Image 1 (tube, chains in turn purple, blue):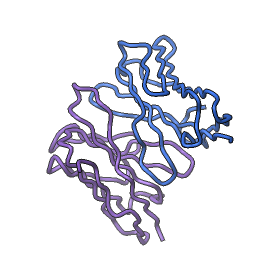
Image 2: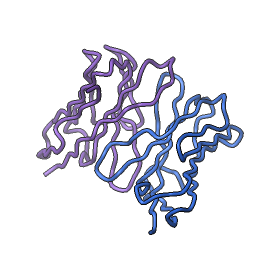
Image 3: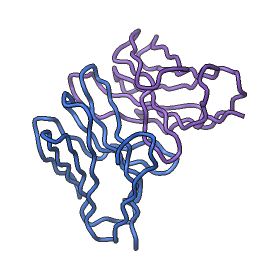
Length: 114
Length: 111
């Protein structure tokens, strides 16, 4: 089935460690996105990518890094510089910008710093 | 209020009644808008979308209204059912394919 897959579903990290969240899509979508969601709050954009080998900072990029080496993959690294990383992370993808179609979401990764 | 950082406003509605969820968007250059539904612990699911050259679009039991003059979007759900209980978000897409979300509204359906 076509879709967008995030892994792992739950992730625990010790303070001071970097951790990478995986996001893979087989929808042949050009654009991919990472969002952070805190309990009882909305989605805030971390990074987005319109095309392979290109990405832009969103509204809360500090302490995060991404890469887009392949069309189907957009991993997010939460670095030790992110002071409050415990949150629910959501990845999404959408077709090429000119088509103005909806973004499809993965099921999320819940990151907890221990 | 729709600001990020505030706890979600809640709309309580009786089963069978109509629901109206409102959203104020920020960018007058946004040309595409989407409503999503999110259930606890899951990723958002697409409900309905509308382009900026339209002011109304209807789906199955849902209608989206767009007022570009005041930068306002609304989602109407007809005959609200228990399965409609969730958090609802509006999203706007501006130039460069940047997709940003409003703060969300929690809908609680009372039997």
